[in-house]
Length: 186
Image (cartoon, rainbow, N blue to C red; front, side):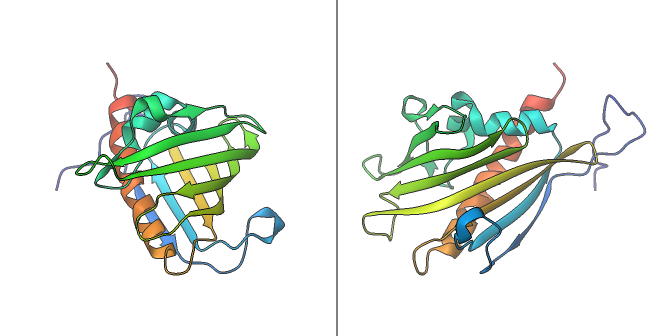
């Protein structure tokens, strides 16, 4: 097995590959008692500002957002990361571009490089009729020279939480690949 890469800033410190844990919850760590049914924690080997930017920069979101088999056309992404601002994007199936799922999020709390909270509206999600709403909370924490991301989301429609968890795990793997490329020295 290959040794983890060493940091240029700290030559004697080994960097671990990213890691995550997942849980399913019924209690609510979100304001106003929203039901959280997906909670993930993942540690990225990238600085907190870089991870935060991957969630707020439209060019970067288009490169990693969407579960396996879905892409996000860059021209569908809009982000205004401030309280009252929004995130809008469309995920399109790679095999059937007519199959599209829209995501609209209105930010209710924003602390640059630390916190993004908002209410979401989802439309066109496979296996789900109509539009449904949920809440998303993303926390960005320094950890061992990298960033610990805590994601809480819910409620999902009946039977959809596991699919949401799997989609986020796949997307965070895509994000990890993007961050590896962005954090390498030129």
